[in-house]
Length: 399
Ligand code: NAD
Ligand code: NA
Image (cartoon, rainbow, N blue to C red; front, side):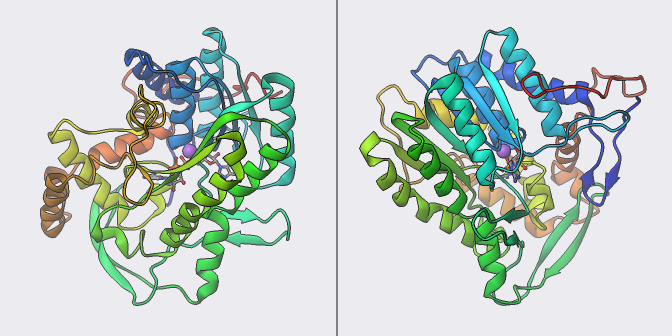
């Protein structure tokens, strides 16, 4: 079928299989070009492996370290006349390239929050790999069905306390307006967000994996967080999502104790603000990201998910001397370039003056939009979007 971008609200509801394959291929080429020489992971489980940081983690492990990877995600397969989701096509492309390179790669499509998918993953590890030495936890989801209670928790993106007013942009139209986001109604909003994006499910995963004996001696596990600058704190760090991230951080010592007899260790890595399907849904953040991209590109220090994950693996998790640089709170920081004083100062100055009139000159809103559509396989010069493409792409390991 002929597949072109179609949007509903801020979201893109179509996906181009060749374009998403291009996106995956570019990331693979980037990692190969880095010629990583440090000792790294060998058998890796990635939970949330199909898009964003999880996909880039998988590509880094596989093509940077020749690791065997099992990826877990929740995506829609392609059907006749109905394109699959980006994560589906990403995985199809990833597996194809991994297999061609002689790398083990299998995937599981289903609800990672459920006991069933955890068991299915354990069975696959036992059958094919025996044990894993790295577990990457990179889920981003609006809801979670709790496996023990059956309760469906929905996360909210709200400030706590007073209403929050700031600038925001509709990145499709580049229209800058003020937005007021009402605060939470009750503690329940916080609790539900923690239930979805906090650390409990990460803990459940590690407990189950350990009990099944599929974690290797010296296993590492990492989950991702975000902090960001003052101007987004009310909606992010000090809002409901920030409370969930605090809960994720509190899970680190719990997991360290769980993994102690395996000499295992767990980390939260604070990553940079990036264009992903999840972050485009947060008000205020896309405008901040457009300005940040402009400043960081001008300084030659721009990074996407793959650049971030390459640094996470080579300069943090698997360094030559085995030392992992951490901040005063025991966290890995790869948001160091984003948070640099000169970068934040310039973003701040631009933030004060940005309007619908000047946004195209002073921000990288175009780069934001391009990258957003590239997540869905669009906006690649090399691809002709007016010709037929086969929408029925399968993930090799999933029948
Ligand atoms: P993303 O939306 O690109 O990826 C989410 C992944 O989770 C996908 O693979 C998806 O299939 C999977 N998933 C969602 N629900 C699932 C379910 N029920 N079962 C199985 N898989 C499921 O998100 P992302 O932006 O890469 O975020 C990953 C992590 O990184 C999150 O913890 C996020 O908070 C964090 N982070 C994001 C940013 C950013 O700017 N995007 C910055 C710092 C940290
Ligand atoms: Na991810």
